[in-house]
Image 1 (tube, rainbow, N blue to C red):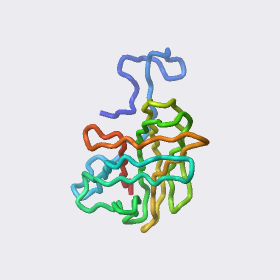
Image 2 (cartoon, rainbow, N blue to C red; image 1 turned 30 degrees about the horizontal axis):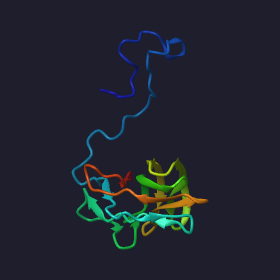
Image 3 (cartoon, rainbow, N blue to C red; image 1 turned 45 degrees about the vertical axis):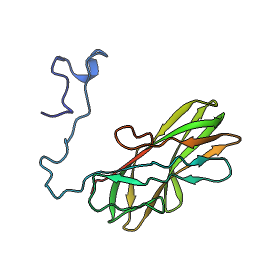
Amino acid sequence: MNPYSPYAGCSQPASCCPPLCPYGPTGPTGPANPSGTTSVAVGYFSTTPAAITATAATVIPFNVYTASSNPSYLIGVGAYQAPSTGLYVISPTVGYAFTAAGTITTSITQNGVSRLQTSTTSTVGNDASASLNTILLLNAGDIVQIQSQGVGAATATLLSGTYPSAQTSLSIMPLS
C-alpha cells in the first residue's frame, strides 16, 4: 500500500476535491526492504536535572542511551559525534520546570553553530517543553549538541527521567 496515494473514498481529482477528502503528496514511498544491517535510530535521555539560566547556554546532558550497541553520543561531554558523513534526522524534546517566568531558547548546534532554535515561554511553577526536528548533513566527526538558555530573568530546571516517562530525550537517525 502506498501511504501517499489519495484517500480511497475520493473520486475527484485533487484540484476539485472537498476539504474533507485528504490527498497526500505523490512520489516514492522509500526503500522497500531495508536490510538488517541498516543503521537504526539512537535514543538518548537525560536523568540530570540541570539548571537553565540566562548567564550562558547550558549543554543538555543526555546521559542514558538506548537502541544502539555502538553509541556515538559522548556521554560525559554532552555531544553526539557523527560516525560517518551523511544525512541525519535530529529530534530533541526538552522539558523545563520554570523557576522564574520568561522564555527559554532551545537550540540544535552543529560544531558550535546554531542550526535550529525554538523558544518556550511559561510562568513560575509551570512545566513546559520544546521539540525540534531537522535534517542535517554531517561530516564524519561533526559534533551536534542541544543547548538551552534563559532569556532575561527566565530560569528553569531541566525535567529528567528515563523511558517510558522521559521528559528530555534525543533521537538521532542516520538517513544515508
